[in-house]
Image (cartoon, rainbow, N blue to C red):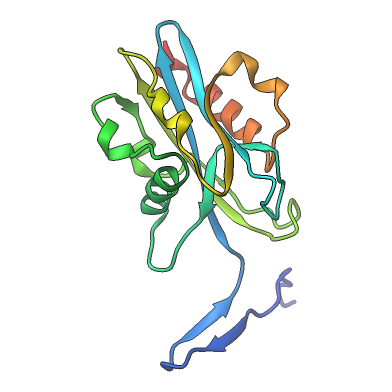
Length: 180
């Protein structure tokens, strides 16, 4: 008996230069950024602009789609910088964990959102001895209404999009030993 798969052929588009691109599921990147300061743990979170097509006004981790010719790690570095002005390489001395620049969680279940995105979730844990880099909370971006460092004990009071609160909880549970 032939195996049966739950898929369909991807459509293709021919570009003017002769290359072919395929219409397929989109890869997204998500950054769970945790900041340790004094005896508390903070998550870098943001509220989506009301002009966003999907989940406007809800809270998320920094996230976005991969660009052409970009790997996941480069994509998350770019997205974090574009949406918050926090440039991860500038804080390498405070970074105590980054999962070897690999995602700690990959979501690929096509039944959980209308766009069937595949998301790669990265984690960065920082120990900030001189205070959280609060200047990023003043950064403005058309996609984001608010950027903030929030104590992880307060995350349940927010209205979350894309299960990002669950991603933060997963990261905390998985790497709790590092945060002591």
